[in-house]
Image 1 (cartoon, rainbow, N blue to C red):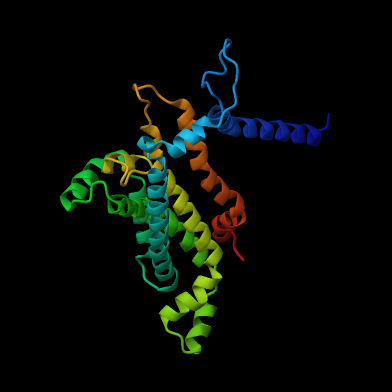
Image 2: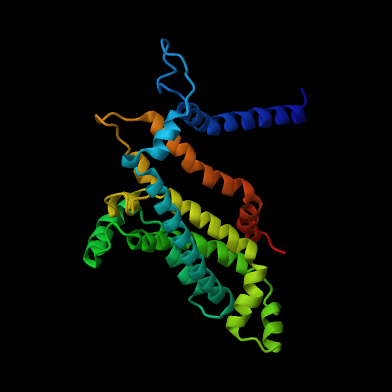
Length: 276
């Protein structure tokens, strides 16, 4: 066997292994969501197909699944929108205005993002309690913005830095102000990067667990990751069928966004890494 064939064979086996390794939990989740008995893998239990888990999740009012999903969509969308707006303005200033503190700002932003959530959540809880924001959307939106902003800023800075400054000069010659340059020139050119950043920010906020667990108390503001984790049966048992059905429904929006817009996401992440 030649070296090229051996290399191709190893790559193929490695790819197949990674696909199976990554998809197995999702396949098990989907199969369990349609199983009447969650222990169908046991020797004495047969798999019985049913839609009852999905029906129960969507219709049982005590589970509050619809409210959890609504809260997640609202909080994630608002957080992503505000985060991208702030990060876009900051990236424009860093890449277009000449000041020595630009690198310091980027490094400081990166340093703040390295603090683990668990080290901040107790102080954040006290702060939100003092503001009276516990169990409200505001208690989640502002921490989410601060948590996602470093990633968004770094992506947009790398993207904006590849946009030629000659476009700005040409717009200034045409009589545009800096604000007009931003939303008439920079934003349209950088729209793939901005769009991919917004998608990543939405996904990050949608999947966040720690802040939502500590800063919410009931279904009025609690998001879907925490809601699913706290699912409980009538007698305290863990309803695995309902949990898997709810997880499957929750995963669909994120998976669809990733599949539909994966080209924009990859382009937005890699554009700033390649010169030219």
